[in-house]
Picture 1 (cartoon, one colour):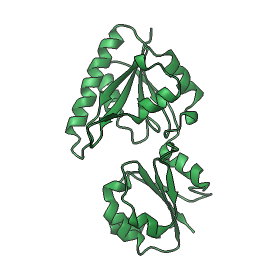
Picture 2 (picture 1 turned 90 degrees about the vertical axis):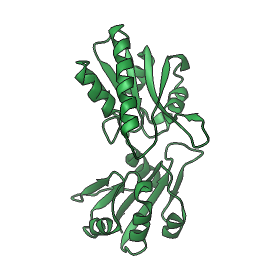
Picture 3 (picture 1 turned 90 degrees about the horizontal axis):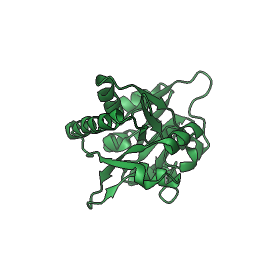
Picture 4 (picture 1 turned 60 degrees about the vertical axis):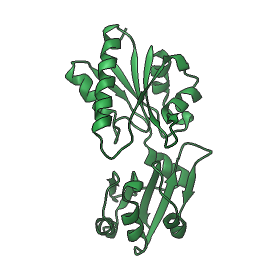
Length: 235
């Protein structure tokens, strides 16, 4: 029995990077709501489920919910509302309910739509923190994102070339969470900026797909996938 719904952060993708507290919550859950999406070829895929299975969580307690991947978020928001309604039914049965999110559930996580819907139904929630993707990326590259009095600017993805260049000129460190949303603008800015280090990542946390480079020409030549990230720092 539980008086709240727990939102568990799974970290960046590597099952070993989940916290012990999060793992304990998963192991004790009666049902785990887990996001999935449909690939371009029509297959159902879920990185979150892959992480759970890597932690030896029983597949029978995992309940997938499809999240449409589109710039038009109306269908996704409707999906989250429907999931909240389903969670409410399980909550009324006094079950231990977990909703999982990659990275940290409180950092640019769309699970906040579910949380907000649950709160509107007077269902309490709590959140277990996790390692966000940009922290895992910095560890992979063995870099310090920000030092001493340096500021860190985090861009969720959409930015113009001129705006990015202006931010770089401030000398502050920059993280671009979803560079695929502004790929051409970012590449245009990269071709002219100087005295910075550019770190580009793909699929960090998934060993067989993980990619990292500082080669600006290689970055410009690549097509940014959805799971990509950029860290820009002073030289």
